[in-house]
Length: 244
Image (cartoon, rainbow, N blue to C red):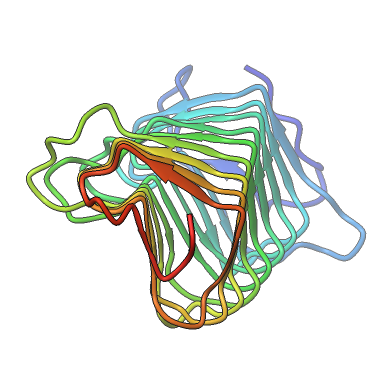
């Protein structure tokens, strides 16, 4: 296990690691011109695996995290990059702006939090593989809960079956999230809709939503849709609000 951290800054710290089991805490502000990197680490146990709190422009690369609550937290933190990591347990929460989650594997299934929760502005989730939330909660695998200009693109968002006791969407965009763009995602086998967009002005381009329990894509009026497709969904309409 290797942690590469700028010795002059203490913004990034693992919550617990598989070697020592000792808890840590991430806090403080990034100093101008300083960038921290946590790379090739295996972190497990505790309430969270990696936490950035009011900490900017850091890189979390090729880490594996598994915790009992939100394996990675970006809280009030901007311009961070999470790349090529396995985010197990209760997934990742992004409450900041300009963050990028790229090439992540997020199996889902944690009982306390959504696999991906995004709030804040201009965050990007792309080229990632994302599983379903815990079956006992009416959550989506990817939730854009607020903010402006967030982008979810080129992800595979796939459940294992249609049998969740609560309706679950693959990707959900809340009404208060403005200017969200969903591009090139593949979404399949969720008990409710593959993609559910409740915010007018969102843009959906070239997404595929197949074999979900209700609609492939459900969108309110004012959503812009181009080149989307859906098949094999439980509702014969396949898509509402955009053309598939």
